[in-house]
Length: 290
Ligand code: NAP
Image (cartoon, rainbow, N blue to C red; front, side, top):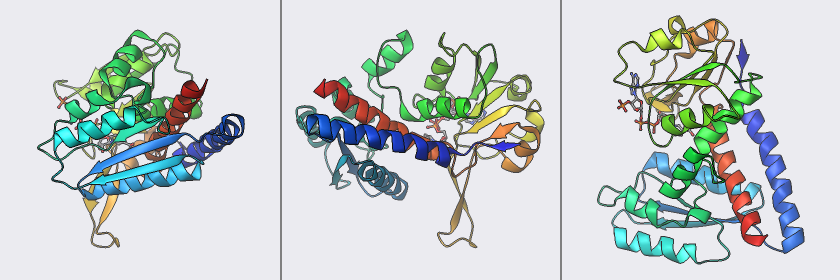
């Protein structure tokens, strides 16, 4: 069994991105700029935003952090996004989700100019991805594709099963895997699928993104299958300094005995999500300065 090392792949891609940033700076005198908006102080969101800002700076990009109180209004965030849309120093806008309950995620995301939507969440980018036009691919699904490629699997003609149909992971992964250039045959499972194991046992690749630890177990896999575990679940654990440990949606112990390759949690999909965010931000700056 091979461990698909997301940290290693992310490090090599980030070195490539840092070189691209340095070249852009010397050719055009401009560093790509990413604005990160965080409303409130949800601990998971704070830690994601901190990691994104750090990665951005390490790649030589400019990170503009905008931290807002939990009480900020929807109109204020939308106005801020519109201001950033018109700011030439900013090439990517990221709004950390979920927003506080009184704010509509959709209203804020819809306000982001598609050419600065480096998360790939706006309806324009999602639509372009679906019909195969040039767009910013959503970061986690894009990272998942890179990880499968890195595992050594050629997806052409293979059967891929995606478990979970969220707009940010499951659905876009299924779309990307079924594009002609990738050419996998895709089955998308969800809570309405009576027998998920019936499909996963025939799969060459399983992508699990349910937010439920233990969704995928070794007995549900075909020997040698590639497993991409997207889940990030905090499991209470008094023996750990933070009082919890992280677990994926796949039961690592049983899956790793049957799979040919598997991503660990942490250290698999997570580092790739941030990497593809940097990738899109560099691409956005290149397009703006072309
Ligand atoms: P989500 O919006 O909650 O969607 C979960 C999906 O899984 C839903 O479509 C749900 O089906 C389906 N599902 C839940 N339990 C299932 C089961 N037992 N069998 C089959 N399908 C099941 O979650 P998400 O945003 O896609 O995130 C999924 C996981 O990935 C979470 O742990 C999240 O933290 C993690 N994540 C990680 C990264 C990263 O960078 N590493 C990025 C994004 C998300 P229904 O539609 O029928 O309800």
